[in-house]
Length: 399
Image (cartoon, rainbow, N blue to C red; front, side, top):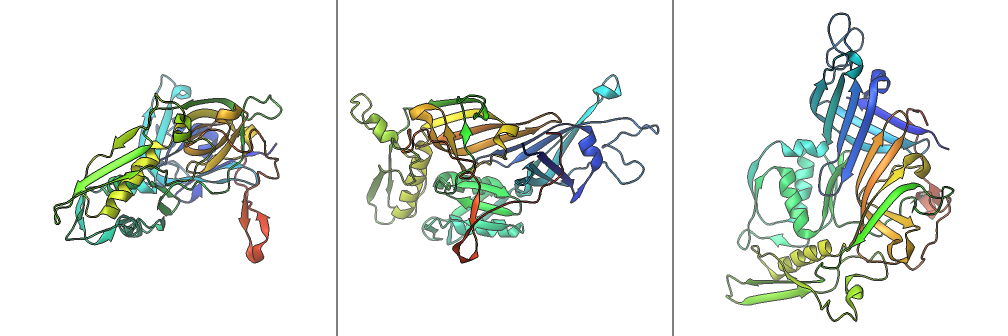
């Protein structure tokens, strides 16, 4: 069994006492919100009445301070990766009746934390949503992956106004398009969910101790989500009424039976329709883009949560990526999109709580478990050859 890896760096360097005093470490990745971390440490009073991790002592300074940069690299030997690269947002010591009951809670956010500090009023003239996202990311020194949002918000037709922080503004634009917004390391992302990428390692449930790596898995299917989105507006120039309808999903289906297939032949179900909340639109193309974004949100009819034994799973499950789930029967086995993962490290174990969603049920290759070789992540090398991607292992902790 591969050894666990957990590396914590503060302002670019490791502090040995963090590992010695760590009670628990949690890193949370989630859709539409900044990634966060929480680190709980034991603290001890020195002979000079100063406290470890709170006050600078002799030798290298170990005191933790607001806005220090914290990087957490974790996983397993040969496949560790950066879970979060961010800043300390708060510290809370708890002084007990004796030193063994005293602790320090340190929490923080990824780099997007710096995008939430200043509220602004900005007029974005003649820009697409994607242009705005790229400019904001660049203003914070971030590289970016931004998907073209097509619609230009012209000054004369529909001026795009920002009132609030850069992060809140971008989050509103992403929600309107059905895009995902997040920062990973030093790169910002503003794009549609990637549903056609190489899947992560399989989650296996209900298949016995020999093959299962999940502690629990709890899915549900929701049948009351509208499958058609209507939208309308009055053209302020031509004084005409314009409407359109999105009745076909604009995104890839992760199974054989989508929401419309579930309703087929059921007269009571009808064809559920929603009227998109009216906002100011400058063009029919903008209207269509907004309606497609609403439809993307309604597509996720299967939602689930569960928990992994990290030692059995053998990798760090990542949010905003595809993961196959096996052993849940014909309805609930298949590829899922991961929306949230909470990684929890203690000296004894590594647990991963996860939340996933799916826009369809069933799968063509029902129930087939991929072999370990098939589960290795692959990238395309020069000359078109396929190679296995590995990472240098970080600090080892107890298996």
